[in-house]
Length: 263
Figure 1 (cartoon, rainbow, N blue to C red):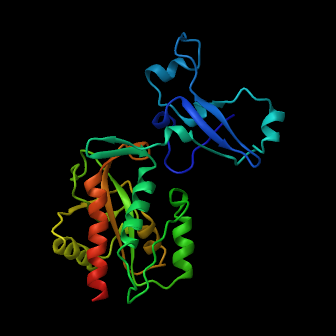
Figure 2: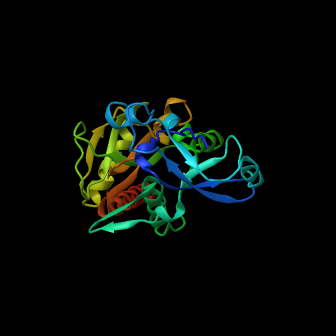
C-alpha cells in the first residue's frame, strides 16, 4: 500500500514497524517499510542511505494481503493509517512522560484536571477536545464558528530547540506569536497574572514554524482574543517527551485563571 501524510508527519519519525490500517469493516495490521539496507548503487533505496531524505513516496505499508482481501476489509483510497495501538502506550522516564500524540493526550488530561475544579462557573466555560487540528484546525473552526466566545485558550506542545528560548522542565510556555499571527496581549497578561498568583514560573516565547487552534481561529476572524499555553516537548510530531510538572502546571494556571475570571 502507498501512503501519504496528513499534517506534519514524516516517515522517519515513526520508523519501520507496525501500523494499524482502519478499514470500513475491520482494522488490519501492516508494516511501515523503507526497503532493504543491503543494496548496491543500482537500488533506488541506496540513495536513502547517503544523501537523500526519506519521503512518504519512498515508503510503503506491507500487508501481504491481496487487493481483494484489502477491499473486503473496507480499505480504499482515503483509509487512515495510524501507528500500531501497542506502540502508543505512554512510558515514564523519571519525572517525564513519553508517548506518540502526547500533545493530544496531555492536553486532554489538563482539561480533565481543570474540569474537576469547575463547580457551577458564573460564566460559560467550554472544554473542547477538537479534531483535525493538523489539517487546518477544522474541529476548532467549526466550534468557534458556532459559538460566541470572549476568549479562546489553546493547549499545545512547545518544541524544544536551540533556536527557541525554551527550557525543559516544570515551567509551561506562553506564546506571544506563532506562524499565524500575534496572540492577544491582554489575555496573555491575564494568564501571566494567573501563573504569578499560583506561584508558577512561565516561559515566554515566539515560534515561527508553529500554529494552534487559537491562532488559526483568530486569524480567520472567529475569535477576537486568543492565547496558547503549552508544555515543553521533545520530538514533536513523533514519540514526544514532556515533563509531568509542566503538564500539571498548565492545569494549575488555568484553574487560577478561571478563579480570577469568576471573581
